[in-house]
Length: 126
Image (cartoon, rainbow, N blue to C red; front, side, top):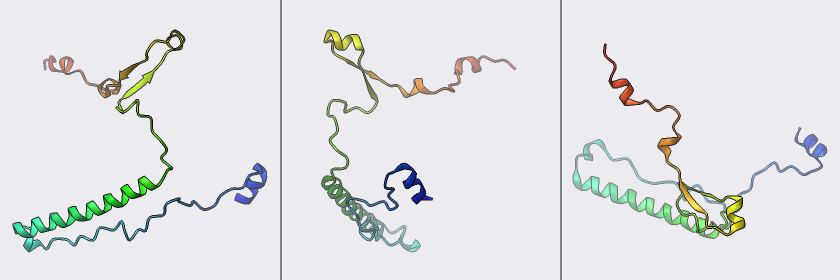
């Protein structure tokens, strides 16, 4: 089927996905043994267990940071819009006149379609 599609389209169809920076799955495994039920109330054992898990998490973070620094697939991101909840809106006339564009804050509470008004429901008498 893929061969027929490639013949119809006149393009080569890739059948395998290849990642640019392969990561060994063995590196991403967290080797933290479970805490024995008898030792769960032991404070020193619990602190050692937490310290060990934090060390494992730190090594995983370092691996991920190295991969993100090496890979250029993410590309350069614009530095002007650092706040994620803002949308840049420019109007055509503003561009022509050389006016500055202003950021508009998106409020998640206004985007909700089903909001129950508490004043309307609280005044009902049975």
